[in-house]
Image 1 (cartoon, rainbow, N blue to C red):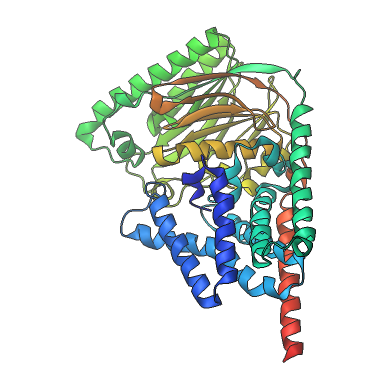
Image 2: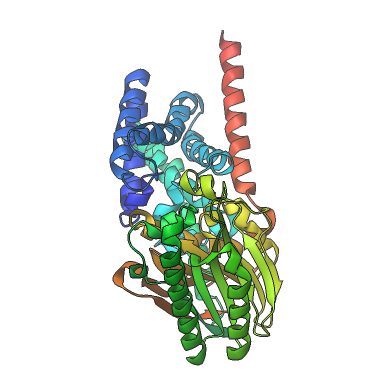
Amino acid sequence: MAASVRWVEMPASVWISVAAMSYAVRALPAASGLFCTALTIYVGLVAGLRGVLPVPYPFYFAAVAPMAAGFWLPFAIDRIVAPRVAGWPSTLVLPAAFVAVEFMASRFSPWGSNGSLAYTQHGNLALIQVVSVTGIFGVTFLVAWPAAVVSWSALHTFEWPAIRPGVTTCAAVVAAVLVAGGVRLSSAPSDQRTIRAASVSFPRELFEPGEVTRIYEGNVPGAALPRAKRQIAQLHDFLFDQARREARAGAQLVAFPETNLVVLRDDEDAVVDRARRLAQEERITLAMGMGTVTLGAPRPLENKIVLIDPAGQQEFSYRKSLPVPGWEASIMEVGDGRLPIHDSAIGRIGAAICFESDHPQFVRQIGQAGTALWVLPTNDWPEVKRSHYQLAAFRAIENGTPMLRAGSSGFSGAFDPWGRVLGVTDHYSGARTMVAQVPIGGVPTIYARAGDWFAWLCVAGLCVAGLAMLIAMAMAS
């Protein structure tokens, strides 16, 4: 649900609200129940997504509508199909519908998996271990199913003989998932090799408000160019000095957040050469979130991550392939969609950039490649900084790969393959550097290998239930 961005600190509210809306849709007459639910969802999202969607007014109100429709649709499907399914299996319709709608949205919506019910449960590590098998859709199912059972039980006035099969089956499955998740966490090895890794973000006080944005847009008039070049030079000095400091403190890997290393096209070769010398002198790996700007070009920004090894060799330069819809998409040259993977002295390193991590099926390339560590440069804004940071834990678990999330305008953090936080800092608190001991080496996961099999299963089950309903209606007529 898109409002999960606001609800990340109140996960229980999601279970309660889904159960309440499910009951309202089923208990009220179809038309009024569906209308009241749709209106409630839309108003809630309009209030909850202020500042979250990068869409100006009045277009914001139109942009919220399809999101509200996506959250309302599972209730509509449940209202139509579930009453025609006998017994407690009718409670499976709502969670299957939620999974199907979220799955289709993650594949075809430009916003990817944003708004999934699963993300509201980020703090329940035992529960979210299931994403290593099912992806986020297993968590979505396990949030919506108990809500459907509660609604179904209320419609049966909580008569225990009637509701016992559904309640006990659902409770047993949820308990089994929690126990399995707890066992997975408790049995995780504690003797993995680790490296000291650091994320360094730039001090935005170097620039006036909006100035960096204008540079990214290639909008630097000739009279302002000397000043911009001086500021960019100061930025380079800061980032490279901080990287050297962290290297001398013991870091083996230093990362810069998304587009933090601002570079004008004509200066790119010289900046990369400087980075290569630094990496070679300090014997570190540099993973640089770089924004290369071609002034005056129709799409002036190349949003990249460049990896330099301790020998001073550039191992890859990858352009972001999935830009955020709107402003970023309008100014950015996109990449080829193949995430970079490099076998280094540290281990097999992979990378993706910010919004790409909102698309689980896209970044599954990391897990499929058996990556030992992945670097994720990001750049958020205040309204999404917490929810977007917490989303990264799901990607680490799905792919079984430790992650260094180098963040700017938000949180930097490090996660192990089980989604446990190893270190975190908030850019808005004034912190410019995050340091953590990050384990090297992934763990194989079913999701990385088999992908969205559970989501497809829910789609198939929903189609079978719908077909059976149509056949029954045809025979009855």
